[in-house]
Structure formats: C-alpha cells, structure tokens
Length: 141
Image 1 (cartoon, rainbow, N blue to C red):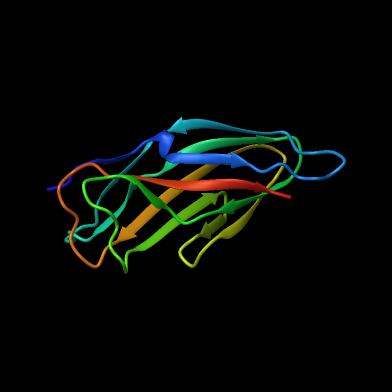
Image 2 (tube, rainbow, N blue to C red):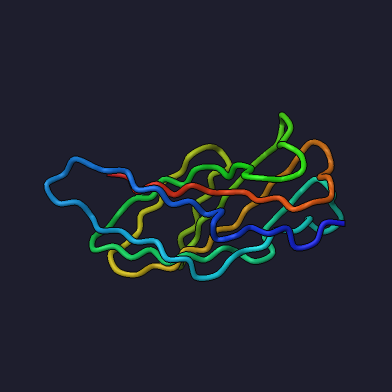
C-alpha cells in the first residue's frame, strides 16, 4: 500500500515572468512546510493531499499568479491518458482550482501564506512507489 507519497517543497515550482511595465513587482516565494499525498480512502487510483504544501509569497504590490495543473515529476509509472490532475491554491477565503486548466489568483501586497493541495485520479490503480507532482505558479503582468 502506498503511504505518505511525498510532495516535497521542490515540487512546488515558482517561476517569475518578466513583465514590461515601468515599475515591476518584487515577488519572493519562501517554502514553509512540505506536503504529503496519500491514497484517497478506499481507493487505489486516486492520490490526494493529506497535508498541503505551504509557501509564503511576499510582494510589494498586488500580483496575479497563474496556477497551472499539477504534473508528474517522478514516479514508478507515468500518468496514463485519462488521468485527471487538479491543484488547489487557497488563502483566507480565496480558493482557486486548476482542474479545468490554468487558473488565476490575485495576491494582495505584503506577505501571504498559500496552501496548495493536489488531487490525481488515474483510470488505473497506482503502482506502489513514491510519486512527486509539481504545481507551477507564474507571476502574471
């Protein structure tokens, strides 16, 4: 049985896109806590967050983040066709899901702690092993 499939802080990839504005935002991402994935109760084909990844976003002005769907970084088997991947970013009362493609979330200036949860549903059961998934957060103009 799969236990504590690791979603490491390295699995949250934050990329910054250079924008053409007179004054650009200064944005920093700081890892706070790693997350863990495990099989959903009673399921061998669905991994879901047991503990969310938490990262701190520090910005000197409001920014918009593009939340891309999760993708497999490593694991004993690739995601087969038909796999449903969803990443959910939340803070305060805001909750944005990438289950239908890329999604946008507005982050206020200052320090904001984001929680990132993942859900991966395959059409076939997961093989035993360690799976690492990543969600990409991109700063948008």
